[in-house]
Length: 325
Image (cartoon, rainbow, N blue to C red; front, side):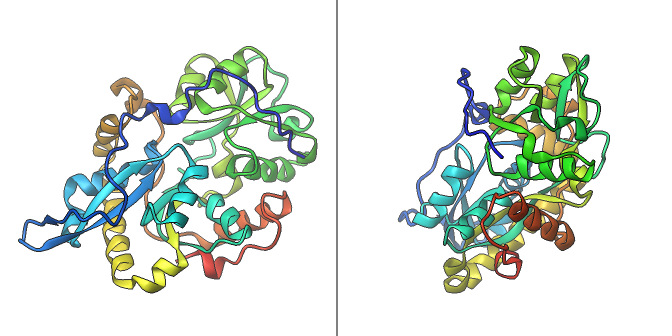
């Protein structure tokens, strides 16, 4: 179903937005002392420096992790392909990725387990922080029309093509005829404008940029897939959860407090995004923010797991009892 062709564009990659990435792997001897005088336990968390991860940056700034006795070291990674090995090798105690990445990892024999939510679709089917767009004069009018067309995603066999395939199926189209190709998000607007692809799946801030330049939304594939779809979360190995239950509980409490604070304070979300990305203030004011919440929607997670198997993203049924908190 999926064309393995990678379009050779001058990709700076979404992670080029980041100016961060400092710190040392977990296990370093460094010990800090918290405000109450107690030693802090250092943890290293691998994240992708995008809007979705704003809560953990806010949580660190607000001292939520320190309150749990944790010295949080945030390290940035280039994407899920780097994040999962980092957790498996022990370089990261915890990490952030979309839900498909730990599903794929477990499908390949690893043993990852989510411990906190990360980001949820806005639930708005007219505008979301991710969408499939076409040029305004395109004959593609609905998700069904994507059948037989070349559609870009940032990574093959991941949450983009999986959710798009389901949306196209729901609209009566045949996703098996779609030619999915990999194009980094920053390059997707140009690929669309230049006719290299017929449609492009783009996340903010590049979605806002593309719409401003005249593209048109065909589907907000996250919210069209399920209005309560949780896109990403924080995970570690099942072995870590079992061997370090107190550490996991501390991280989960701090992360949940960070998610609730972010949801209640969207201006602080937009402000802190400017500290770890190069997204300018004007764009930060325009982009659509994810929802940040503590609880996962299990109906949506089950639908995503089913779609992942149906469209070949994973080879066998996903064991959500093992994967989810």
